[in-house]
Image: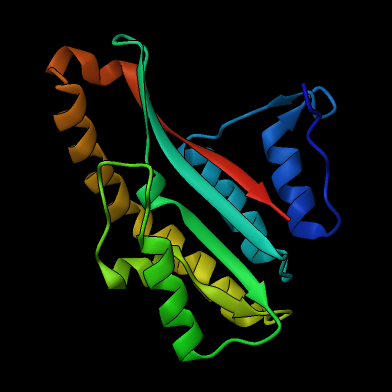
Length: 170
């Protein structure tokens, strides 16, 4: 088993402190409440990092099933140079998710889920994280509709399910 390593920098430390335990031996997957707290810490850190990847998944304990939402993954990346054309190409590339039957073809949502920022541009980084955080209300509803359909959830199953988020940074 690989130990999780704490990367350098404020944001990597925030993510490590909120997702690893027993000195990195185990990983914790926060729920929406935990994710919102982590995103607030990142916004308030006034810093950037090379990337953050947040992959949502839904678990239903009663049905003993899980669905990962690769198409709703948030991936913010910092580069030396960014322009509108590069951002557009990046979004289109990220929207092509090979390993899922579900696809996301909403360019507007793609712009929220796959932002690029210039290295050390704290303001645009904070705006991108904030925009993602605010969009989670809509994204979670979309994912819940998929869960209800794919898992064929009944009313009795709902209390046993929850969304979690796998978070990586570098």
